[in-house]
Amino acid sequence: MNTRKLILDVDTGIDDALALAYLATFSHSHVELLGVIGTYGNVAADTAVRNTRHVLGLLGRSDVPVMRGATHPSWAAAFIPDAGCAQFHGTDGLGGFGPGRAARMDELDGNVDYSAGSDGNVDYSAGSDGNVDSDGSDVQDSLVSVPAYLPVRPPADTPDDCSDSTKADGPTISSLISVGGYASHDPHANPAGGALALSFVTCDDAACGPANDGSADASAGGSTDVSEGVRFIIDTVREYGTDVTVVATGPLTDIDTALHVAPDIAGKLRLVMMGGTLTQEGNCWDLTAETNIIQDPEAADRVFHSGADITMVGLDVTHQCLLGRSATRRWREIADMLERGEIGPASVLADSSSDAPSAPSAVSTVSVASEPTPAPSPAALHHPFSPQALRFLADIADFSIAANLKADARLFSAGMPLHDPLTAAVAVDPTLVSCLDLPMKVETQTGDFHGTRGRTIGDPEGLVDPHAPRVHVALHVDAARFINEFTDRIAGARH
Image (cartoon, rainbow, N blue to C red; front, side, top):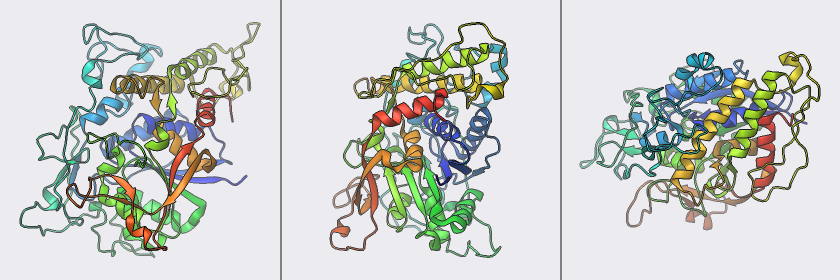
């Protein structure tokens, strides 16, 4: 079996962390994670980098290089995380279980502290809303009133490049701030409290993305005025070509910048991206745009038209893949068994409890030693993660499960959508989804004869141009197979 070489471009929130965990269960001979790039989106870019390093450390993969990518979209000079993302990921991106909390975990002996003000992210204290379920089955109303913001699109005349020029009725890009994909001057923009990490740059800075004139790339040791993450994408795609896949689970700003700076990689770039929707409602306030796309619609549209080999894993399929509490309970039980030394080599088997609606029933169970035995060494357990890592994954998943349930009890009654884990899985096994190849576009303005900013839709120009670039749009997913594999891998049942 050929090794899958992957680069991840993530805005590490909860489902990004679960995607990292999923990939970490594969052997190096099957999946080789070459590097991870942290970008803005669910959180600020620096927070994404910090969260990524924290998660990889918990998973025993501190060897994987982590780099910083874009700090803001191509249409703005700065970025502020918005309250909507904080509702689903916490202001730290990890439901309050991120690096700032880790220092206290030893004192808690693995138990989660839901006391009032424990980390400033989630208040599970008595009286917050009358619900104090420590298993994450409920959270306070202020976290789950979705959407909490009603932002509108940035100005229709937002420039696509970093220049000081401006139209008479529009601001320069240097004055624009993105609040979760929407212009900050709009009265409905709602920044997340405690997450106001601004990342201002000047328009001379290559971090402005595709504003570069192309001179930023020198094929042999020239200018390096692009982010280390973008440079890594360019260099790695040039080295491996289609043998490497870029998995983007946040905005497409880094991919867009790489293609602009090094257009020669377009024909070699294989991209699997989480974002967009074709047949379903969006998950933004207008029920049209999808969260990753709305962050930088201009960048996404340019990527769609680049000619790269793109698979779009959008809400059409991710909303069919839901993770429920039976899985997180199982992870906690296995963590306890690992600590007690009750699990021997290869004795963790598939569980019959699956959250996939039409999953085939499995008869296997978790095996427990019948006689007390000395605790085996960690290496002998053959489990991919430590008990602490398993509990962390259960904690962040329970946070998201609760938030999604409150957001839409009809759509997410079975659990949280596994947006990013499914995208990572498709990069490893493309047969999980069936795709329709279409010329695609992203609408970048709202109004008559423009459409709705952030909408991903078929490009009508493709009807008359047989050579128009096409995107593999995932419309069907084998949800049962994916959910079973994902939950089993985290539980240690598959290697």
